[in-house]
Length: 48
Image (tube, rainbow, N blue to C red; front, side, top):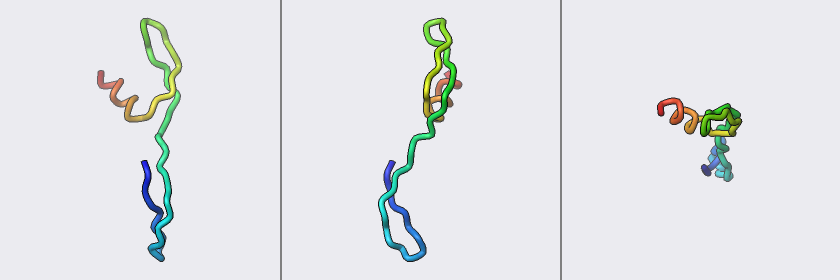
């Protein structure tokens, strides 16, 4: 995701927000596998 930094002077400089990636263990095809997932994906998996 992209946007601007806006200090008090209101001068816009480009910036980027990184994805919140976490290391989690997931059961996949009956096996526990370590994956790197974003937090929204982890939330979706926990609901399923």
